[in-house]
Length: 127
Image (cartoon, rainbow, N blue to C red; front, side, top):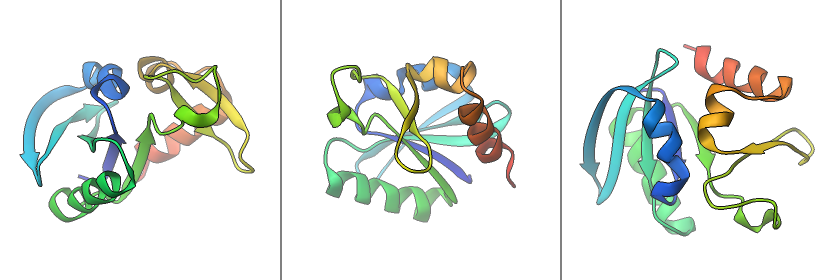
């Protein structure tokens, strides 16, 4: 497994889990993991719970138990402003500017911005 997608809350990855095929569920290190295929690529979705320590512990499990080589965080931008809601995914371009925000199912299956499409293409097609 080389691509991992980490969320703190189930609501933040609901759309992603719905988009997966060949789904399997596992529990490791006290965390829930969902394995499957997204756009034909093996991925593992992880729920960390809230906080930096929880995210670090879950990231360690993703690397050690699932061999994650690439990690994408969803739902960690709640403090950016009123326009960002629970369940939104924010993609930040170089320099810190927000280029696209929306629900996971929109961002991962039908992004509107070329920068987002290029990023996802690069992440999902690397070996």
